[in-house]
Length: 291
Image 1 (cartoon, rainbow, N blue to C red):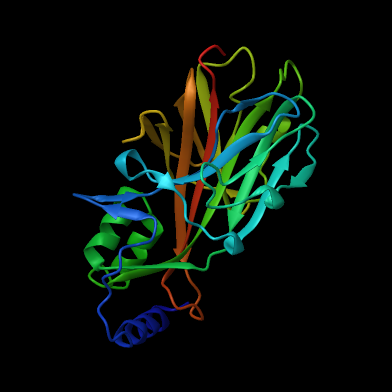
Image 2: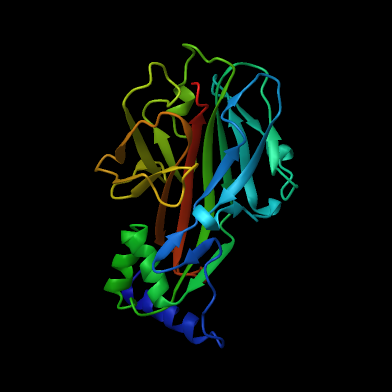
């Protein structure tokens, strides 16, 4: 899309609004700086007993802003479990959002490592004043949007985007032993996803935890990946930019519940009514203290 086309449609779109854009982005909070509210699958435990039901919740936010997600069921397009043999099982019927203590549950008959995969549509929209939108782009390392806004002289204009939620969670059922964990290290087909190079449940556990970020089927360079201890989640414990091959290397966590997250965005086509298409992607995993 040409520069004149981009400027033309953004000028028309913003001029058409009668009420000034003051809405805070759904799923974000703002203090001294922009802080994205990350989304993830939170099983009560990441180690399951075979054929025993495990509750889960869908979580958003960090620290004092952490809460159950209010995503409606109609927006969820995928929730499945990828088994050790690579087969997938649809789990959407196991979701019962908004329950007193859970948003759903799952259980597996056989031992092994399973990957839960979650995806929503992109119908959610956000509109932010320029300063807040720029802060958010800077904090999250969304360089494509920053560069486009600078190149088109829109850095002082309000920002808008459609966004979707993408999440994976790795759980271990029984004792996986030396069984294959290739399903953990293979992409699951999400538009944006974090793919471990080695499973965090492999034994002996390595000292380094390398991951790849895949966007639209290709390695993504320059993406900011954050590692957060979910028991102390006010701020990430470790952050890295992906290299030219889409890889980032973290210190392998020891015990507890953990979250990796990444965000990426791209310019929308002229037929859409927001400027950018943004993807929030996460990977949760963990161990008991005795593991």
